[in-house]
Image (cartoon, rainbow, N blue to C red; front, side):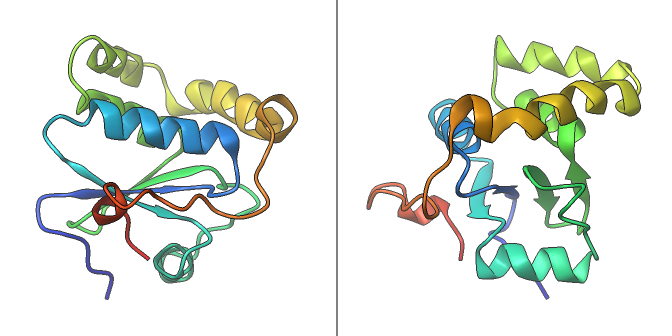
Length: 138
């Protein structure tokens, strides 16, 4: 069983990707209602979810959104669902959910495929500061 704090959604991200880490920092900064907690895909909880949901990490390797209802969203759907909870104006991005996922994911996959080349990567996963530690699960 995967336990996340009540009334929260878990954002799983590529812990060594600079773009992913900047995205997590952006979410934290704009998460005024404290709806999200975070874990790297490479963490023990990330690996547990990957195994439990039989996720092919060669196809899904950058962002997942997991809720306490055991619902999991991938790629552009995960990113847009996160955006809807971040308040104005970023929540306006939810309009893109009307675009079929295969089209949204084509753009998403193109960025994800090139993210290390364009933004670089870290040697190891991000270590949250002491004040942000409570937002991260392991």
